[in-house]
Length: 187
Image (cartoon, rainbow, N blue to C red):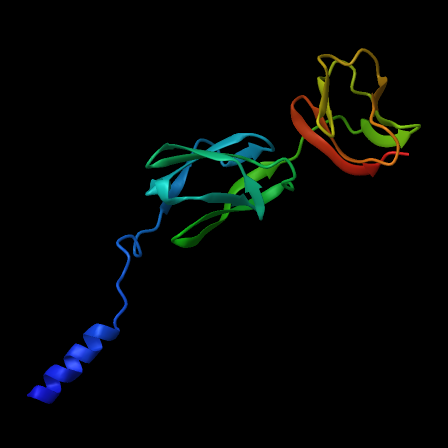
């Protein structure tokens, strides 16, 4: 009998304490609204224990998010998300919770003959557009934003002074949807 009690006590002392929330993890029940979304759009996901989420990834890209309630979490589709079905991953102390093909990211539909070209010369970043008359064009060159509320002509040239031999990321939005991203060395 002493031997059995001794073995039992040895087993008790070797067990590690279990954290109170070790078995708690968020559960995802769905999304609020349409699963068809655009880049930079807000998506509301529903479920339980959403307050445990510390990071949201969409197809591996970090997404900004906020907690609306314990049962709703809202995230923004990252700017570089490719069109098509996207996986949403929730991360936290609980581990990872992946939902395959939760949303479908649609591409911006522009007329076929439109074009956006990004280039550099003499310390300037140049963004050229073709056949976007009447569309809203926004450009982020490094930390500098420029917006044209309504493109005045079918061909536009937009210059931003940056300085020689600097590396900047240029993002061009048409009607508030990202259409092109390019990192350039300013020549």
